[in-house]
Image 1 (cartoon, rainbow, N blue to C red):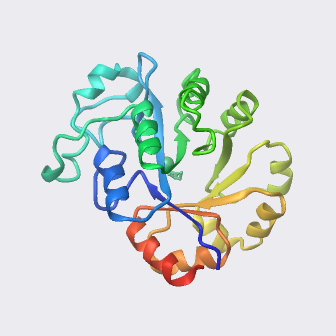
Image 2 (cartoon, rainbow, N blue to C red; image 1 turned 90 degrees about the horizontal axis):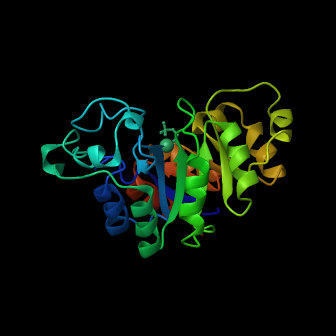
Length: 248
Ligand code: G3P
Ligand code: MG
């Protein structure tokens, strides 16, 4: 069976604070994962930053929307202690810092633009500038639940691959895709299990399938058997072991 790309979801997030420098470093130190999935928002002063939620409440010792903070204000927050006191002292990364880390460690990055609730005017162009100024167009691919944003992104920068995040069954998926210029599809893994015909539909259209968030061994085996091109997991250690046993 074909080995899928193994992407650590928010870094090695099962064991380390999600989207923290430590979670990315431990992915590299402790696993053979090909890269990361990570999330980007934008601060009040226009800095793309690596965090999952619209607010800082769950994963930092602060409160409020990311977009209401300046970058300097966010930098003062601790992003590790919520997971465990042992992880105190972790601080938010900018997109620039994460890209530099991926370049230094030679890892892929699936960057999820978190712009489906707040649209973050200009985020697409900021991401494009950050990626192209480093010549990382081959190493980075983007995704979003905001499919209008992905369409705009592809029009602005055809060289960077785009992906449609997809988590609910849709009517006439084939016709929906006719209106899209995306390179990849990023379905929740349960959709591929409940609607098995989707895998062929996507592949026949030349779309790579990167599925999420696959944490149990049986589901990992199943997604590999169905021919997923990439698997996003909180447990990159486990997925590497499963893939090693199954794939050539
Ligand atoms: O990109 C896959 C997955 O991360 C999408 O959902 O909420 O975990 O960012 P979420
Ligand atoms: Mg994500």
